[in-house]
Image (cartoon, rainbow, N blue to C red; front, side):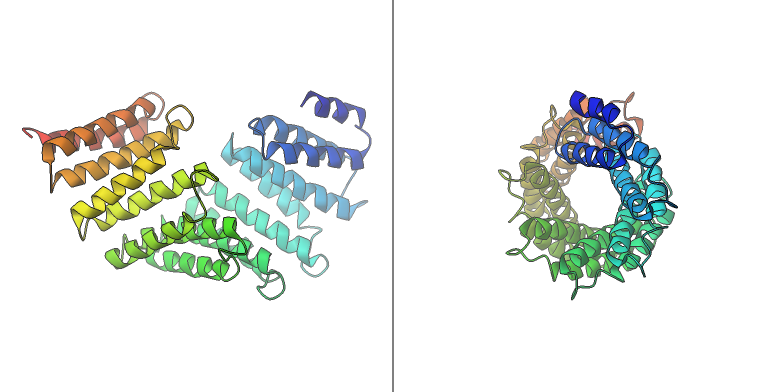
Length: 361
């Protein structure tokens, strides 16, 4: 890291070198734990290069560097100041699109529109969910005017998967059924390209996203049927997302699978589906440890408590009550009132509910 910072000073007046330096820092930052530090080096290098690469004098270099700058801000948003860095990424991508028009630079236009959609979708996680999701969808649809399945199948699959995520996120706040069905459709389009054999990692990711869409759709229509479809998709994802090869993805999908089984337990085979949910959550917790991933650990423990509480309604009430209480108490070791007041209240309410239910058990 120190070497990169020193080189930035040495090549302060050489924009080509600054862009290469920024690219190197970006590459390292996508795989290293010190993500923020490397992204800040990349951002500084790109911004210095843009002192020379003006839009009027060097339009192509300007567009490329603005796109890279947006990518660096997008990665930085994953670890700090999400809203602020997403907005900076959006600004950079929009500057790039002043050069990368659809008519003149078709592929670059589509790439940048896809990136712009990602930035809006990430921003939607923290503010103006509906508005930013709609902007993300608009950007992805612009990208898909170029990224057709026939001409650019890999890019088509990527953008369709992203589009599915945006519709799923939008479904959280409006038109749940309609937007979930659109998410399912987009994931289905992506899976026409992302087969298990040809693109296993992308296949696993898209199947997980498809499961999410079905799980959310189950909240408003055909609960049992859509839960079963979600379970099927998550199990397909887990054929790729193994604990040994992709532990974080494994933990995420196992947690999602548990949620689908727990929801299915509301309408059929309560005991059996609760036990399957518990099994999935416990698999997730083999990866989502309190030391390494405290937030994920806390949520999985809360979910595990929910499953034990529901199971206690139909069998071994005393034993399952104790297990539910233990899981909620584990979650509260992470979600303290001072650090996570909203989540604390949510888990505390679950704990109170199970204690009230279990009195005298």
